[in-house]
Length: 594
Image (cartoon, rainbow, N blue to C red; front, side, top):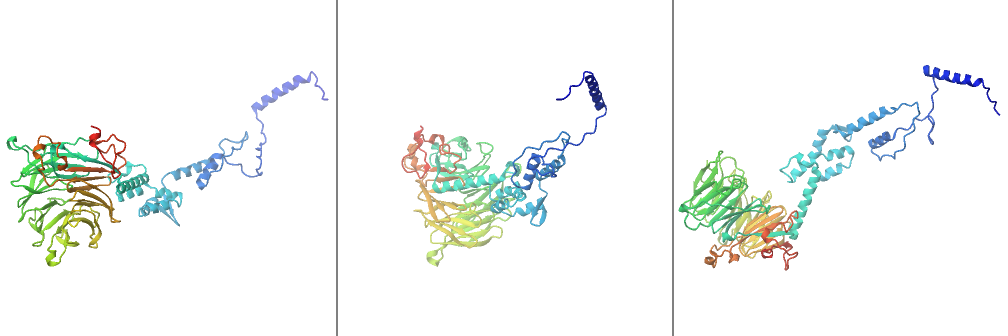
């Protein structure tokens, strides 16, 4: 049992403690270093484990999966709080350098600058870029560069009017464009879409129709000209005002021809009058001129503002100058009556026209008037089409006398020489399409009821299909399909590679217009007889005898616009399903909502 200290010793110990405390405050003693406690499973002598965030960073830099974070080791009281900060600064700097633009890209044993490596990757396609993205992290960043995918979008024809800053991910934009293209192709093949009729009852009988980029222009026997924008039905289709005749008396003349491009609309009338409207300025004509005789042909430059007309033995070209004043850069005298007339697109300077007058084809230039491109006596021209540097036309030969078939000739407009001759048919070529066909391809229709696709490089037919009851009157093609219209009113859609008919639609009158793009189709059935039976009755009641008036059909194959939204409001059906066969197309029944 410990001895109890005496009463006198206790005050002395309190004084010693107080004095010791005062001395420690004045002069702290040197304490021996305290060793940190060893963690279980840790070998003595090893460096202490680094903090969890440093281990996580090292794992990310090494490319492996980050290890599970373990609690940081306890620091002793004497250990400074900033221990390990140097390693953290090094890792942070390395992370920042990796997040910044890569300066050097490893190509096997060579380190290349990023710009040079990007130039090498520009020669790769989509599949190759996808494989390269799986090589390493550096190649993945390089293979997904926006410049590469923007270039691929432009090369494949997608989003041509956009800049590289309009999309944040061009790889995704290209994927969406290709998915939409596949969807449209499937809808075309399976006839999935909506169809609507473009009618204008006060116009009476349809005379001529033309289309440009989904905008339809139609002329009628009442002398009225109507526009439709099939891209949106919220747009109010205007009636273009005509120039009043002398004194304003008498019935207006019939419309003979109409033409439209992206900026102008032109109409020619039976009395030789020509009116020009601007699609941007309004419904009043901006230019007007008169011929003494009936106009036989009308042409409008696809991408310009030049207008060419043929009346009698004269071809006249009108175009505005830099200040907007219309002038006549050329008037040409032709030996025979003109049957076909076209303006050459993408011409700088004075307009250039190609005219076919019976068996002579003229190349009309202001500096060289009257140049004959082709002339063979007794072989009339049956159809004509013009592209930027070439002209294609069909000729009718005396095959029953000389055993020579009808052909299509292709001329170079710069050298004025015949490039190739294609076709070998007993029937006459009734229509040809060169300007909207793929490169080195041409499609033509014949009176022998066949549609032929020609490869201009080989000079022979690549495809020939038979499916019309009468002659073919209108054709157009793209990379995989063809659309043809016949004299019997039948519109056929063909698969070019399979040479098989996909589907068909029928109307009463001959098909005079076929135009399509990736998601829509415009067809026009124009009657030959402009004064049908009962015309005296239709003067009072324009709703009678609708079947004699002709019709314009608009087909929409895009699912972005549902069938109920892609027809005119008055033609929207209230039924969920339509009875009868409809070729999988949501047909419009006008009287359902009236």
